[in-house]
Image 1: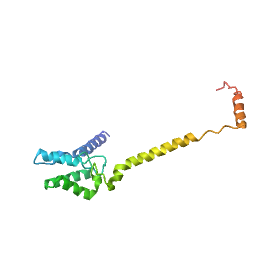
Image 2 (image 1 turned 90 degrees about the vertical axis):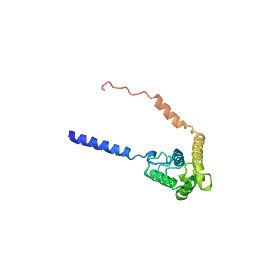
Image 3 (image 1 turned 120 degrees about the horizontal axis):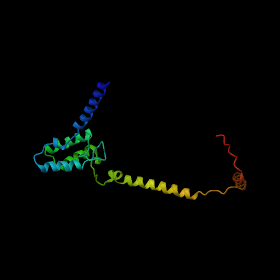
Image 4 (image 1 turned 180 degrees about the horizontal axis):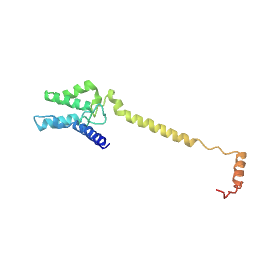
Length: 163
């Protein structure tokens, strides 16, 4: 039994280690100058991970993000400018690939969608609160009042001590 536990523990450690070994680093990309390295980092920071969506391409661990970093690196090494690379990625993936998309009719939903949703939520909450204030308790009838008084006046039954 002890050998089984040891082999399981070793397998678990190998699986955990393999995930860390496959994590990316920017050191795998080679540049001719520190300026090129900085330009690459700035460019991938401007791009959104298409899988994670709330992370930049620079910080994402997704496989697609690594593929896009490789593509950006390859295009930079081929001598394409930042604008050419951005134009290619926008043409391929749309404005959503930009972490800060431009304000134009096709991106209104990205820019104003959250505010519209917050406005709708606030409207629903305010309306619910106002409707709750408008509903009033109806007074009880005389028969109900007498019944309640009779219940209050009734003496409780004596408790037996046989518990």
